[in-house]
Every structure is written in structure tokens, then in C-alpha cells.
Length: 116
Length: 246
Image (cartoon, rainbow over all chains, first blue to last red; front, top):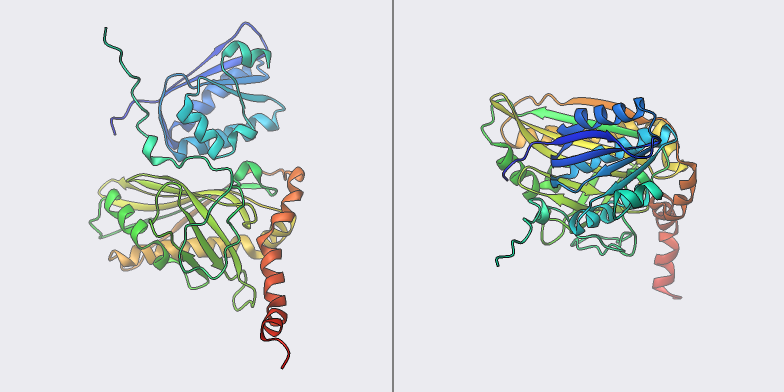
């Protein structure tokens, strides 16, 4: 496997109550610090809806999926919502396989996720 | 004009395809309580969510992480303590395969819990199981190996909730410690098999979510614990009715 570094960065949106975490490159259990730091940044900015943008995701193993579960728990405990955009067919199937699609709303675009 | 196809994800072959209902592919198992059920992960469980990590440095062994994983996959059932039996699929540990297992919930108990797992991920460095509805746990467990300096470390890491209130009670009353000992023994057996004289298994546990998901009380409807207990208790009656009147 040609490894691509994990790239995780948070940004605000047109909706002050929502924020986006761009998740790109390779995501494994080692991506936890970066993911949680980005989440913390959005929470500090007052986000109630967290949108994960997987449009540039190159690789995710089961450790990476496990990270999403721990993030989901944190989001739920704070009364926030977690949504996903940018999933290609392969990663949508993984969300279905792991039944994460029952807990994380999947949308076709950031605009749809903000409106959801 | 040349059209460039997008590069397929490098993990494509490592993941199983989603299924609506499981179909067991194990061989020689006495009971199949898994076929027809769905998978159930930590998001679908009832009890508190725990991350448990068991690791053993393979001191003195020269296997690479990839070689260790190959051994672990090939001989997976042989490393289990005698309290559990793993009925492997004919195709081995590969994405999409569904194994069956039975476990004695208590030493010497007449009831053996029959359930299974689905292999949702497998590559050269790790493989991950997901539990079906009815299993004591709603969980993922990943078996992996990695380099730590000059030595290879084998690891089993679970992200789990108990499936229903009955299982949660059993876990609180000692089931969790039994589960820990099971995986500690499994890793120790694995380490010994590759030449480690005195395996030192480390255990780390973190409560990821102290809340219980009460909406999953309904998981009692799938409970393999209840199903197995009923099957065991009614076995004498079934034997009598099969024999018929004399």
C-alpha cells in the first residue's frame, strides 16, 4: 500500500451552528489525535452539527471506522449531530456494512447536510 | 481524449460487502444461530461502551507483523482457550466469511452459548470481526500486529457494548473479567506458538461511553444466551420425542 498522510482540517460554514471536518488521505486508528483536535476546534466555535467531508478519502481500515464510532459517542453526548458527505460507493458500502449509516446521516452534498 | 478512471481505494479488497442478513459459512458447527441475523456493532448495543486492548510483545521471535498475521489467520481456532470453540469458514478468515462459535459462559456450565462472527475486514496486517445480533456483545474486534522497535507485537482490540440488559448484568457480575482472561489466554497461546517462552500480555481498558442505550433493550429478542439456555434445558425433551413411544 502506498501510504498517504492523513489530512484532517476543520472549517466553519455559512451556518454558524455547523462545521465541517475534511477527512482526506489515509485514515487509521493513528488519525485519532488529529480528528479529535478538529472536533474540539468546531465545538469551541459553537458547532452543533458536525459534517465529515470524505471527498478526498484514499484509504480507511477498520481502525479508522472505529474512530468514527468514538467520535459519534462524543457528538451524541453533547447533543450534537454527526453527518457525512463525499462518500463514494465503496465507503457508502462500508457505512452500510458496519451499520454506521443508521447513526450518521449521509448526504450527497454539504448544502444538503446543512439543510438536513 | 483520454478519460482517466478514478483510482480505486487501496482498501477495496480488504472490506467485506454489506449483506442484509448473514449466511454462515462455517463448517462442522453443531448449531447455527447466526444465519438470517444482521450484524450488530457497538452502535447497536445496550451496555456501556468499552475499548479493550490486549497486546503481547513477541520477545525473541523473528516473525514480521505480516508473518504473524498469516499464522494467526491460518490457525485462529487453535489459540482459543478450551472454554471456546471457533468453527472457521472453509475459505478461512477472509472478508465476508461468517464463522460460528460456542462458548461456555461459566466454567463447567451445561449451557454453551452458540453464536458467531462476520469477518468485515482483512488485510496482511490485521483482520476485524463484527458480531451478529444475539451475541453477548455488540462489537468489533481487530486482531493486528505491528513493529515496536526491533520486535513484533500482537494485539487484539475490541470496541464493545453488551447487547442487552441480561448480558450487561452478567458482565457486571464477572463476565467482563472472564472475557478479559479469554483474550489474555488467547494472546499468550499465540505468543507461545511462535516461540515466546513467557508471554507478558498487557491489558488496557477505557470506558468510551458510560451511558447505556435503553432503546436497545429490544435486543433481548435476539439473545443467544436465552436461546442457548432454552435449547440446553429442552434437549432431554427433544431426545425423548425423537425416540418416540416404545
